[in-house]
Length: 226
Ligand code: CA
Picture 1 (spheres, rainbow, N blue to C red):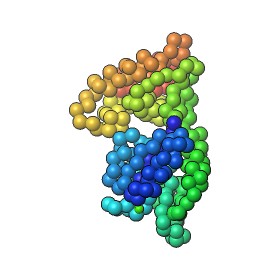
Picture 2 (cartoon, rainbow, N blue to C red):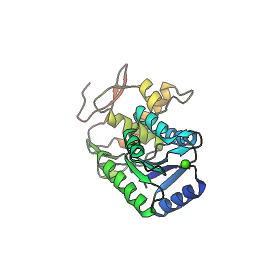
Picture 3 (cartoon, rainbow, N blue to C red):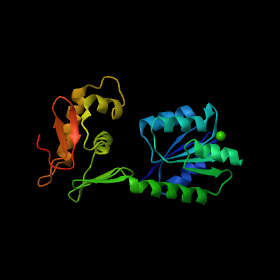
C-alpha cells in the first residue's frame, strides 16, 4: 500500500484529501506545518508527498528545497492557490515533480498521484542474485518466496542493496539507517545484520551479505571468496 504524506494547514481540505486517498487505497499521514511535515519525513519516509506552499510556520518551497538538498528523491506534488506562471516555475525548479492549482478536482489529484508513483516504481525495483526488492511496496522476494522483514531490517537491506559492491561500515549504518538514534552501538548493527541474514540467505543461492573484516559489510552480486 503506497504511503502518502499530506502537508496542508487547511483542516477541511486536509481531512477530505486524507479520506479520499484512504478510500483509494493509500496509507495516509498528515501534517499541518513544515515542522510537523519534516518530523514525519524523518520518521518514516513516505512514497509521495502532497505539499501546500503557504504554511503557518514557513514556506513549503523552503521545506522542498531542504529535502532535495538532503538527497531526498520522494516525489512531491505541490498544491497551492498561487497560479501565476512564475510560481509554478519556481515550484518545479525547487524540486516539485508536479503542480496542481487550488481549487482542483480530487480525481485529477488522484490521477497525478498515480502517475507520479508509476514513474518512480520502475526505478524502485531492484534484482540482485535472486533477491527482488521493491523499494516502493517494501516487498522482498528471494528464490520465489516472499520474505517478511521488520521496517528496520528492510531499511538495512535496502541500504546494502543501494551500496551493492561497496564496503559499508557500521558507522555508516548507524548514521544512515538508525539515523544517529542516541545510544545505538555498532554491535546492535551486527545483531541486526545476523537477523537479516537468517531471513534472506537461502540454501542453494549464493550468499548476499558478506562480512568485510575490520570494515563492516558488503552486499555482493556474485560469490565472494574473501
Ligand atoms: Ca496553506
